[in-house]
Image (cartoon, one colour):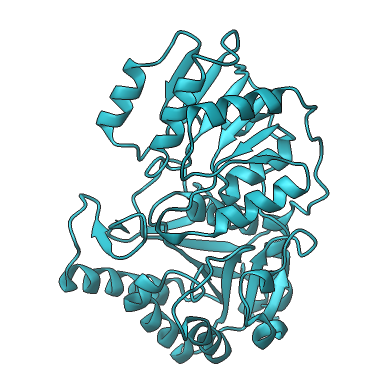
Amino acid sequence: MTSADIRPLRIFFYVQHLLGIGHLARASRIASAMTADGCQVTVVTGGIPVNGFPGSDVTSVTLPAVVASSSGFSGLADQSGNPVDEAFLTQRRERLLEAFRHAAPDVVVIEAFPFGRRQMRFELLPLLDAVAKADPKPRLYSSVRDILQQQKKPGRDEETVGLLRDHFDGVLVHGDPHFIRLEETFPLTGSIADKIAYTGLVAPALPPEPVETFDIVVSAGGGAVGRDLIRASLEAASRVATSRRWLLVTGPNLPEQDFADLTKDAPGNVEIVRFRKDFPSLLRGAELSISQAGYNTVGDLLVTGCRAILVPFTAGGETEQSVRAERLEKLGLAQALPEAGLTTDLLVKAVETALSRPKPGSADIDLGGAARTSAIIRQIA
């Protein structure tokens, strides 16, 4: 028996969140499952640090933070919102490559790329080269959510397929093919069908009963783009379900002045906070959730069986959340409202309708994606 046979499997996991925190949360959940499975996991993050992500059970490497310079993901800025220069990008790239060399992994997992995160090619293409030249060469996987942003620019999907076929051993699709299949949002899936493994949705276990109970919980993900949803909910709370307790969770990235303005205008039945660590438990105790339709929020909703009004994020031509919200609405698991043109009247009516219906109960969707991702990696690495 060699030392490689008895030492833990070493995994190098790259994740870059640019606007919300969904990518980071999903990757952190997967990394924790891998650690629980006996793997030695290094998680490299490159966005604004978020308390609690990744978990303390992994080795964490933090690159100089970049964010999307607009909601359309058209460029990169530093943590203060200033455009980044070549020296900044060079520093990041060198730190990433040094972290890879130091980790000497058996498996490299890159979240989203090459399906997304094209802005990060300045460091990810060199990482692919480093993986190819390593001896022994680690296996390389793309970790991707079930619904992709649909590309409009000619040649983008072909470029993705080329990178996958030239560099990657597999694609871990974090979804249930009975809910939605990758080819529904990535038309060239047939070209990479031999590389795809579905894991199920990466969702949490059923959370404990809440210590504190709110009837209606409103959340805006990371908060960078959810101000209008929070404002509409604040106005709705003064007109509908006024005898019920409302909790508005703005997200940590809502600008300070916006948070102060919202708090100033809050009626007595509303509490406004930036973040609640017990958010999944709050959904378990709530009568209704109002939120965007991000991957992780929907996972929490499906686990807890909470009634849901979904207002999918669509700025900058984003399509992913709309596809998810519409599919859930067809299954009777949520109501979907448009982000563009969302009014207080529309939201009030939706709240009345939702509260008049029974809770949806358990969804027939595979939610065990974190543990299954780890099992797949261990089996084929």
